[in-house]
Image (cartoon, rainbow, N blue to C red; front, side):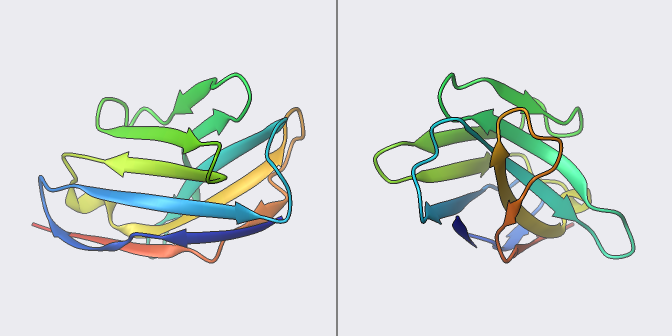
Length: 118
């Protein structure tokens, strides 16, 4: 599975961005797609995930109510709509995927930078 993330950029606090992650190499039935982020000097953290088949969704507490994860089966693409952005959302955002039930995410995209100015 190859993942290509895009959509990052510079935005003012309170603004919005939509990240995309296009998957190739296989269809994603039975897979979980996740978004993670890593800020400078910090560990990578979980942001959101979606189970491709049942649309089961999880969010980190820090983004609940502001971020929305979704997927387009026809395009084999997962999105992360980010609203009400805060400076603390500044990070490199990564998409990743794993087989449902697996402990670790096996495939990772290259990351896209999101910078939120105050």
